[in-house]
Image (cartoon, rainbow, N blue to C red; front, side, top):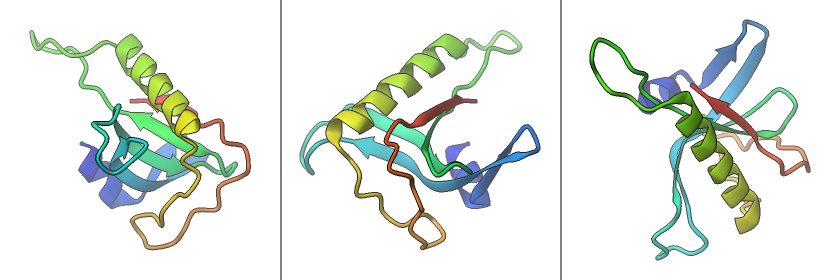
Length: 113
């Protein structure tokens, strides 16, 4: 699902808010050989210039056990805190090759879908 959304390069939320998708499966680690904390499903740049941490989870349906919205939110928050703690301000160009115009506000927005 992350790859399909990343190929779109944009994610519209509530019709009036568009997030520019920067990358998918972004590893969180301090150095190249660190085991890391996990991977952000999608990273994006919101209309206000803040980093968007997007966590994707499959819901429960037709007898299939999925993950809860609470788990998605908690993982997204943990990844956002880790991003800030690691000081990862050197954001690479997005999927379209253009560097995002992030604001100086390093508090990411967390979105779970």
